[in-house]
Length: 145
Image (cartoon, rainbow, N blue to C red; front, side, top):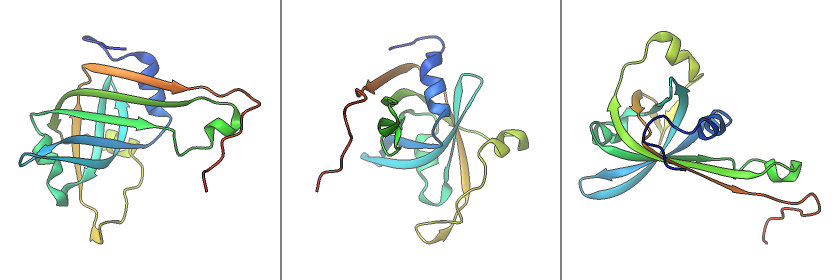
């Protein structure tokens, strides 16, 4: 579901259902994938991540990809579809106001054993996709052994 103007409302609503996703870009010519906390604010995505890795600096001014899903939820067991949302867009380092910071809730205490030091990015989604996996009530999701 591409979008050149505002992100698809359904995609933004799905993002509101889960707190974390994965940010992807490259740093020093190598790809990386980092976990980030997100909130939807005015059609944009605010991300909080650990500043100690320097990933936020690699993203600043670059086009990044971000994705979130409910694959680890027990959604399919309750008859709800599994879904994923992905988007790409430019990112910039921001300093959210206290009200926006509160939207993120409590921060982790540590990241890889270091005290968590937050860094914030704002991503303006330009290309948005959603995917769903639907299950019939008669299907059971089982873990492979």
